[in-house]
Image (tube, rainbow over all chains, first blue to last red; front, top):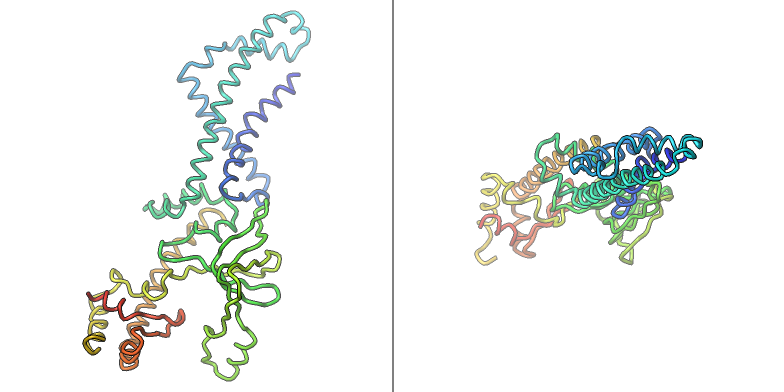
Length: 289
Length: 70
C-alpha cells in the first residue's frame, strides 16, 4: 500500500506538472515531443516539477498552511499505517485522523503546484505568440540568448521556421522556395503548415504559389548565359497550394521586403551623398513630370 | 537546432539584412548614375523605373523618389 501511495505521489508531483504544462503549451503551438531524447525528457520533467514545487512549498510555508492541517507526527502515523497492517489494526482511529491531515497537506501543495505550472505555461504561451516583439524589445545579447534557450526548444522546429516567430523585422514577410523530390521548384508565401504530433512537417500551404520552369530556363541559359531567372516563374491558378511534407526535398526560407520598391531606399538609411544623387537625377526631369 | 543556435542564426540574419540592404541601395544608386538617360526616360514615360539588381528587378516609383528628397 505504501508503494502504491508513493507511486501516486510521484506521478502527481513529477509527471503531472510536465503533462499539464505540455497540454497548456500545446494549445498555442505544436510541440516538439518525440525529437527529444530520454535524458532531455527527464530533465524537463524534473525542472517542471522542482521549480514550481519549490515555489509552492515557499507559498504554503509563508502562509503557515501545512501546520493548519497537521504536523510531522501525522506523516509518520500515516506512513506507518500504510507500511504495516499490524500498526494499522492497532492504531486505526489515529491512522485515519492523520491520513486526513496528510491528504490535506498534499492537496494544499498540489493545487498550488498545478496553479503555478498553468500560470508559467500560459506565460510561455504568451512569449511564443509574441516572440518577435519580445526579442526585438530585449536589447542585451545574453537576454536574447536566454529567451531563445527558454522558449524555442518547446516549439516544433518547423513551426519556428515557418511562422512569423523568427521574422527579423516588421517590414519583411515570410516566403519559401520548396524543392520537391521530383525536382520541381515552387515559391510562395507561407499560408499554413501542418505539423505532426512528433513535430515533423506533414504539409505546407503556399499562398500565391509560383512554379519554376526549370527545363525552359536551362534551354534558354544554353543559348544566353545572361537569361534572367525571374522570367521563368509561372503563377499557379488558385490561391492556396498544398505540398505534402513527404514530397519535400528541401525548403529555402526567405524574408523579402513587404514592399519591394521602397525598403532599399528608405530615408534613415540614405546618406547625404545618396540623397544628392537622387536630387540631381530628379532635377534633370522636366518640371511637372 | 537548440535555442542558442537559432538565436545565433537570427543575429547573423539581422546582420545580413542590414548589409544586403546597403548593397541593394548601392546597386540602385549606381544604376541611376550609370544609366541616367534611360532612368530619366522611364521616369518620364512610366513614372517609375525598373532597376536590375542582384535581388531581382526592383521597381521604384517616381513619387517615392520625390518623397525621399522632400
